[in-house]
Length: 303
Length: 283
Image (tube, rainbow over all chains, first blue to last red):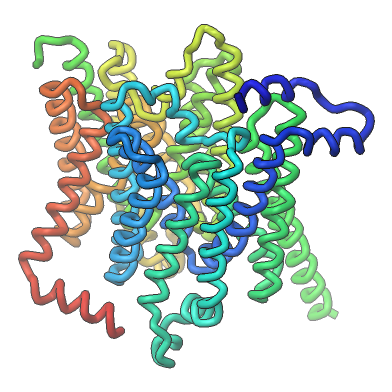
């Protein structure tokens, strides 16, 4: 039913009346659900992603989001609810990643271990999908998700999970920040660095598992990494940075949803393109600014 | 098993793909650039779909996208090593583009060719033609020769960038060439095991080789050997049990080798292994 409504609504395009267009955005329940879900995901992704970028765990984050895919495939093969698969696999993945990070091997050994884990997850996912013949048509939506088919109940579940995840990170924010910036000093001051690292990966896995049911396994990552990376480019201050990261994620998601509503192209494309565009803009302007500063200094020294 | 032509094709092409992946993978792991390989595999997916949408040769799109992707990552990154946040942002966008092309492709091609995306993502090693096999062999030999030609300076630059740069080794140029080479190999492996699974061929055999030896040339050989071996094991498994997809079996074999390597090195010197674990707790 939801898809039929999407079909009906999607090709109407923009009118010349922005107010009417805006009202139309909220006219359909599926669109309201998508906006609500997008808002929740953006806030959660902005907060958790900021810490993920700070801790340089982008690869681990991407691996977790990939692990959601075999989770879903395994659940549909076993006839269990999809959510069981998402949460089960992401929880296991977080455990494995924490084990890899905790063994404190060299950087190259760690990246090999994470890469192998991710490849195994994808191989399993494909295996499950081919064993369960019926789902092959749904593979695209498992991987890329559908923003526009979300039910009201899903939004409630999403809200609960997101609130729990953000609350956990907020409680541990100060020691987590300390441990992420300078692990050795934090450890010397008695901060439980290992436990924090493990807990953070679990929360990351939890939020990824929930988000990937809506955005698909591959695109969760877009909302986690790019707004946070942009915020880190703009300010090193934690409070301001997290606020910026959330604001950017929100703006990108809302704009992306609205654009997707009035065109035939998918939400994921708009969300990722907008956020990457912003990131590039900030990178380029910062590079220009620093070049101007150095040439200014050189001129001063010459004078 | 060798009586079937598709199986012979798969074994020949697979061996050469495995060889190239094993060799390049050794350096990918050494330089801790597995994430770059991960990103390139998604770039491969987007490139192939873009070519399909534009009506160009899919293979050409694949190679152009991955080589270009490798070079862009090298340029954006610090010292041509591409830091993980830059890679992450770039490839989140690549994924978005991939979704776009997938949508256009599936709506454009109303005959219901929705499996094209799946083929690119997970490969089709049992469907290779004679030309595909020849291409795979030529490219693998080319990539392998190129890599061995720059192996010595690349090794130096990877192990100690600062000293290598001081000695006049062109560190940045080497990094760029290496990433372009990685792109080439990624595109080639995409045909065999698919865009999503080639990461396993890059990371797992090389990771096992790094665990087993610190000597570089022995490690390179081991990595290539493991990689080719996993392809053979995977193909045989998939031939014997036709319900199991070949790409999954290849990766399962590669990860199996890696886990075995972890287990044997841990068993060889259990005290050192547990000491390291304990140190991880304390230090």
